[in-house]
Length: 95
Image (cartoon, rainbow, N blue to C red):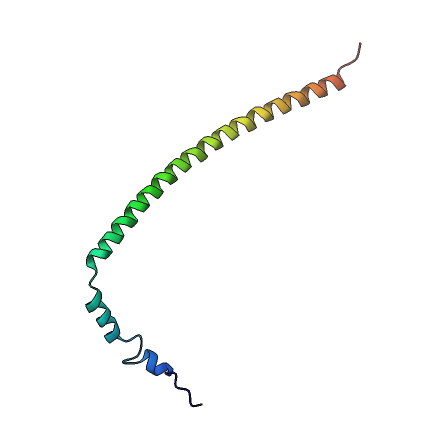
């Protein structure tokens, strides 16, 4: 049991890998306020493009649904007319 790896308390306890002192050092080194603003601006621009694409896609989907519904309605109508004609042919007295 002579492991040289740090135990759980050393890693996560006071002064370990995830301690507040490590986070403070990263904050002091990085700063990066401008970087975050640039990243947010780029993400916002990307989101605007995605929204525009979604609107175009939604319009296309709506148009396809309308066309599909019209085809379904006309096909159903034609099918019912055909069935009525077939029924009339069978039930009408032949002369």
